[in-house]
Image (cartoon, rainbow, N blue to C red; front, side):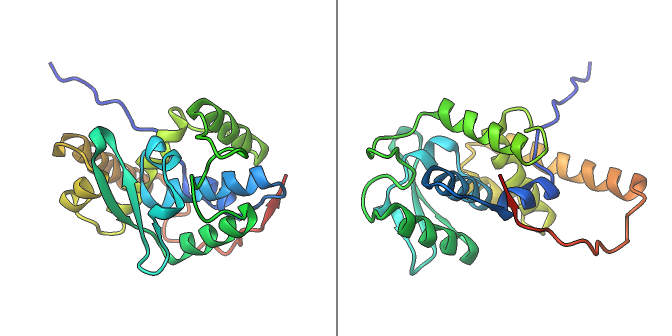
Length: 201
């Protein structure tokens, strides 16, 4: 008896673009945008990001040191775009030590509060957030990595999966999505001439 695999929820490209082009106004909104950008860019778990400290951010070498389960630290690369956004957030927050995404009094944010804020942001930008919203950023990172030619083996190392089983689920989903898109999309092969515009809430 074959067991049907559950489809992993992800953000589509248009929704990620809306999140990245959103123009925050308040300090809390700047913090939220930087946090979302970090989730999108690194594929890290939300607990790793909420525990990230400024001392863990290596702007010169484009590296973040993440503190994972069982006190296992790992270094992960960040893009030039994320470095720019982190620089901006550091200037806005006026902090160079302590938690990167901490509360105004420097304590660690709660996962539920972040989930509430991300869902509210998605809806404010005109789309419904996917199921398992915070973890969906991790799924989205993995799918984009594979679509851009990354190997399952290197993705496993990047995401710190203990086995290839979960990583292969990402690979299978990536292949399925590509096949469905190629066979059913009326826009397949047609260049997108629309431009994303910054959005304000």
